[in-house]
Amino acid sequence: MGEKKKALSSNGLVAPMAGMPVWYSFSVFVLAALCLLISPLVLPVMGQESSQDETSWMEYGERYWPTKPVRGGVYRIAASKYVGLMNPNHWPVNSWIPINFMYDRLIWINGEYKPSTPFMAESWEYVDPVTIIMRLRKGVQFHDGSFFNAEGFKYQIDWIKNKKNGAWSRAWLKPIKKVEVVDEYTVKLHTKRPWAGALGILNSVPGMVISAKALKGDVALGEAKKLAKKAKAAKTKAVKAEAEAKKAVSKGGAEAEKAKKKAEKARKAAISAQKKADDAAAKAKGAQNLDTHPVGSGPYMLDTAKPGNYLLLKRNPNWWFGKHVGRPDMPYFDGIKFPVIPDPSIQLANLKAGKVDEMDINKSQYEIVKNDPRLTFHVNPVPHVNYLFFNHTKGVCQDIRVRKAISHAIDRKALIAGTQFGLARIASCLYPVDHWAHNPNLKPVAYDPELSKKLLAEAGYAQGLKIKGNVPNNPESQSVGVAVKAMLARVGIDWELEALDKVAVSDRLKNLEYDILFGMWPWVHDPDLAATGMYHTQGGFNYGRSANQKAIELIEAGRELVDPDQRQKNYFELEKVLYDNYEDAWLWYSMEIRAWRKNVMGWNNKMYLEHREAFRWTHPLWFKDGHP
Image (cartoon, rainbow, N blue to C red; front, side, top):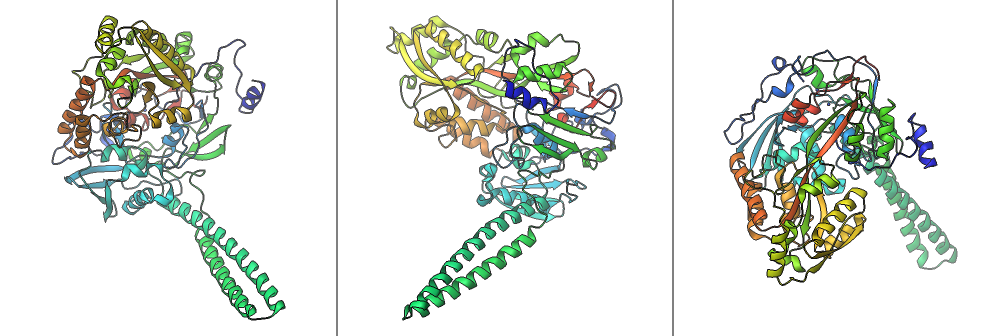
């Protein structure tokens, strides 16, 4: 603990009060524009225009905030972890908040989690089921002074799709056959099949636009390093061959001439390799690794990176969006600092002491601090679904009666009250209640322990049964596991519960060594990602544990239904199929609690809930008097 205090003091932060407990928190992910200063944008989809008012998120007048923004000051956001790699397509990215400040996106999602709000993509249209025309924004300047255009967009997509570049997001772009440049600001996406999830994917990591100039420099730098390594190896080989030739010559005989030719060949190869390395180094001159030197077009850019200690971003004076809406002072802070403070209790101590300006509050902390007059709070839903997932392939949960018994044995209200401090929403299925793909006709599974006992008896377990499984080994998940274990015990189910680290959990998943597991699917945006991930046999987190054929058919259909109404009906039906089969025991949808110091201005929570990302990342906050 002494070492942690010492490390934090270098950031000018304060230590917690004596006796303050240690809590753990989730790390989660700024405010309104002049509608008359930007042209209306329509999003035609198969001949239909969007019915949403696509400019309502750009309100910057008094309805948004009663006072005018003030420039100045460095804003401080408590970070549980250092950001990690800063090319969002490389892993690990430990915190997405700094990433969102540095990179603008093609499309934003709205309050229903629909990717419907144009940003760097000005408009788009499915001209047929396998062709999307996208018109890109003019005048977007990157941090390195280069400009966004169709050629740059194509280069980024091709870069992600190229396996040798190591983009973890590459699989998401598999449906793309090719990107065609139509003109300087228009591209045409040709897909291998109808791809309904295209906009959702381009709202996510592949749509975080990177400077093509910087990407090309990064590639050149990597190529230079690779060729330098080859040149070094070739030189070593040549030196060795020369030594062997001298040795052979000294001995004389027929082998001498052969060794001399081999040495000459190696010498020429070394010269050639060195020339290639020198040429590559010349091309890479001035280039930097994007993992540590990010180049986007967002409101803030990299200033100072101190891994494990803090990240400092500085204001982008040429943010295209601020100019676009007639507000060149946007963003308003001179910089944003992310001090790394792993312990939520220390974060809170620093927030109260005025050493940080924003943090995510752990649910266990909320009751203690919610009436603090120095702070402002907002409790909002986030699209995370928490649930127990069943092994349908091995063990007792192959029987739907056992799955029903487990699900009806869980008192979800009590679970939320006891482990989430009441700050969550009861779940009925995969998609959160405010998500456009959520089936509103589905009700949460009722708590009915007597029904559970009856079902167990019908399944042949009148005397009870034992099941095995695990939860992640963090305090919040362990508290959930203990609570669920007690609820199951009341109906005669003994859950042999283990708390395991991520690697061990992954092994259990892959080997199907469990009956039930507790987990979470975070950030349920495009409905296909979660559905495929969990319920398709080819999904990355299925591992053969679920093979509901009707659900698989609906998942595959949902990928190709580019008509939004048809796609919504498809996912309503998918949820109904999963629900009726008790595919899993869905527990709750998460909530987040964000806290600010009172002198932080510009957060309009009503607009945030209505427009989500489109609001948050286009409405920068500011200090009331221009300094912390």
